[in-house]
Amino acid sequence: MRRRIGKKKLFLVVVPLAIFFLTVAERDLVYNRLIDKQHFVHIAKSGVEAETQRRHDVVYGNMAVAKRYVEIEKQVFEKLSTLNGMIKDNAPVNDRGKVQDEIIVLMRDLNLIAEAYPGIKAKGPYMFLMETMQEAGIRLSNARHNYNSILYEYNVFCRMFPFNIFARLSGFREEEFYEAVHGANKVPTFLQLTK
Image 1: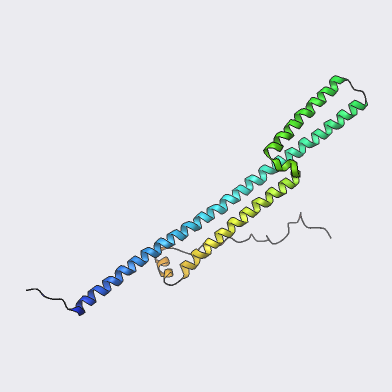
Image 2: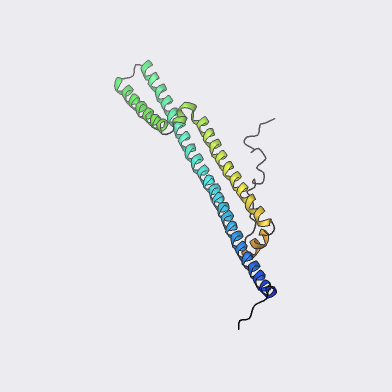
C-alpha cells in the first residue's frame, strides 16, 4: 500500500527547494553580470593605458620630427644665404655647385619629412606639433571619460540591493575613478603670462 504525502508536507519540501534553486540561479546570474561589468571596466582601463602610451609615443615622435624639420629648414636658409653671397662675390662655379648640391640634398630631406607628415608642410612644424598634442590629449580624455562611465555602472551595480549581497559574497569591490592629477587645474609656470 502506498502512502500519500500530504499537500502540506509537499508544500514544506517543494517551496524551500524552489527558493533555494531560485537563489542559486539568481546568484549565478548576478555573478555573470558582475563578471561582464568588471570585464568592461578592465577593457576601458586598458584603453586609457593604451591612449596614454600612444600620446607619449606620438608627441615625442612628432617633437623629434618637428625639431628635425626646423633644423633642416635652418640649414637650407644658411646654404641659400651662402650661395647668394658666393654669387655676389663671383665665387668659382665649382664652389657654388657644391653648395647647390648640399641645398638639393637638404630639400630632398625636407620633402621626405613632408611626405611622411603632410600636415607639417601645410601648417608649419609648430602648428603641426600643437595639433598632434591636442588630438592625443582629446583621445586620452575620451578614453578616461569612457572608463569612468563604465566604472560608474559597475560601482552602482555593486552597491544596489540585492546585488550588493552577491557582489560582497563573490569578492567584487568598487573600483576607483580616474581623477585629475593634483595641481592639474593650474596653468604650468612656463605658460603663465607675466604681469
